[in-house]
Amino acid sequence: MTSQPSLRGKTLFVSGGSRGIGLAIALRAARDGANVVIAAKTDAPHPKLPGTIHTAVADIEAAGGQGLAVTCDIRDESQVEAAVAAAAERFGGIDICVNNASAIQLTPTLQTEMKRFDLMHGVNARGTFLVSKTCIPHLKRAENPHILTLSPPLDMAAKWFAPHLAYSMAKFGMSMVTLGLAAELAGDGIAVNSLWPLTAIDTAAVRNLLGGDTVAAMSRSPQIVADAAHAILTKPSREVTGRFFIDELVLMEEGVTDFSAYGPKDGEPVADFFVPDAVFEQVRTKVGRALG
Image (cartoon, rainbow, N blue to C red; front, side, top):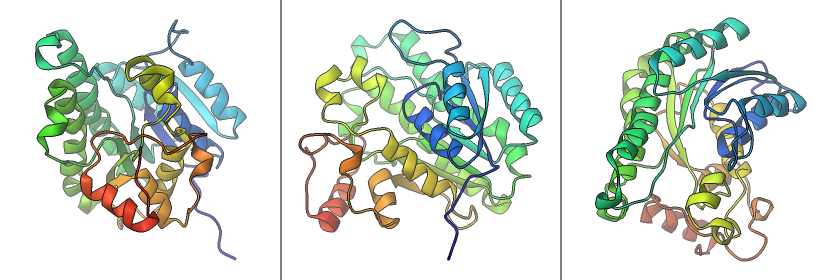
């Protein structure tokens, strides 16, 4: 009987993991007995957003893992360096870097203030680069090191840029970090991949920015992304790198055929943006259905 892939004893450094997809990934690892560092800004309760770094760690420890909460704005180099150092000191190293933190504003060019442009590029592209860079020396000493970034395939189609140019530039900047680092770090055996959902995911961003309860009702649970992330992060790092994964396709390869547990309760989930047409063709070919 073969043992199930596990993250037991591994240390994950997760940016922006107070809630949503980042927290779901953290909790999935915690159920294996992993150590999880939550590096995010939400130190105190937010009036519009659930969870803090402290409630996240409490949930991680209740799930069976060990947690460390570190207040960290990933745009600030000194804060990132301090957070990574605290993680390595507490747990003896870092095995996995999860770039989950992201800023979003879906506005056309004339409605995008430059301070919002700077925020999105500072968090998304620069923050992903900075967190990855700072974790690399520790990852080089790890047994099966991974960098996983929550960002889309590099599909350079105008339809993804025209409606919200600033956000798309910043989000694809995260994916460019994956593309470059995968090749740069191949000799070190560090896997560098991206993961993106096929469908909309029920997160605070969806509820607050993308249509509220209406879109949330047509979305899947963050658990589908967490399960896909777990499948990727337990693979041999030298064998799986430079990939732009889609959650449902990852889980299909793991043998999952029924996705109803992830929601929504009624009907098909609505498709996410940034998903290339070829991916939808793959899904239609494999399961014979289209998305809403």
